[in-house]
Image (tube, rainbow over all chains, first blue to last red; front, top):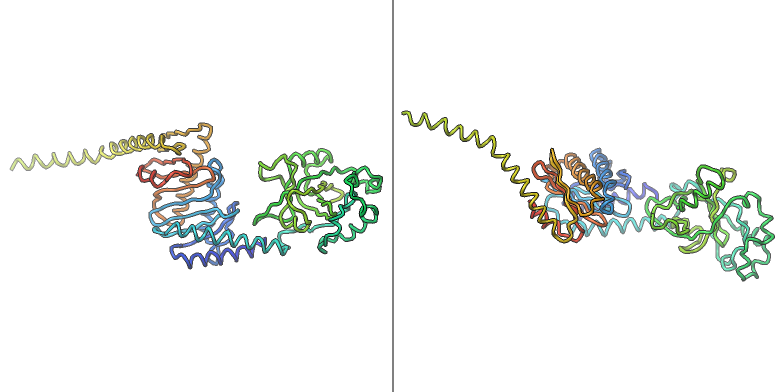
Length: 299
Length: 134
């Protein structure tokens, strides 16, 4: 998401919340890495930056209680309230006798709604700021595309019509072939594929969709085991990029990252940002073919 | 004439003696009361344990001993970070701090020289615990 839009929207939200609840003395929003992204004042106060650093060190140590969801400091002259909203933290300085229930109701309803709206708006219109690696058409792995997928309309930005045409020419019987054995990789056509693709290991993985405010659309999450295996096979230090190919023939090149949720490790998943899922036209649970990008392939 | 002269120094001596040693006894009694209060609280449903840290000693009673270090680090960080925040924004003395995680919550406060953190389940009423300790 464009951080400037996010900052402006949240700042306006903080101002409106302050208008509704006059007990708020100051407020700001920080990310989970301790960066103040917005405050209801024009500029970020140095005090806020200092406080943000204190909150971040506290949040880092809050693992034993299941992370830091909420915090309330009651002081002699007022209160400080901090609450996690998605991947962000709202911090507000409140007057001594603030109605906390009312405050929580307002912030708990307004901020998540704004974030959700912003998230869905930016998902619909891809932002250039957070997608530095554009989707590049890559040579498709030679298996015939499934019949229903060919009938779907394909967004022009992926520039894959040419690839599909090539695939149709390469597999003229693909339209008629309904049997699953048509997907068998041991077809003679496979020998016509570039040698590079033969050498590079590829794997079918199950798509898991994820979204979030600070999620980069060009980065997918993979199992550490898979990445290690590939880097060992290709004799490279690490796999920085992968090519993803759907069974309808759409491809995308994305950067790699380890799966952040330990519960999802070792399940043969590839976690793809929602925006990328939309561009690739894949849904959660579908299979995609994933292939590491070697040095020769990457630019 | 002689009687008031004898009485006056005696009065001063008594006052000085009270100022010197009375707070120490009071403080010891407070710590003992605090510990006794915490022992009572510990048996309550939902209380996971507590940590008291004074200038020279600390006392820890946590149901799961493997988490003592993590809890102690969190307790110290909570009090230190919140003091920094309060100093930054001029909130004065801290009465209490409530930290809520996904699994547990912590009530931290400073009583005299003792820094205290009580770890509890999320459904425990921390306000009643605070009132009891205060």
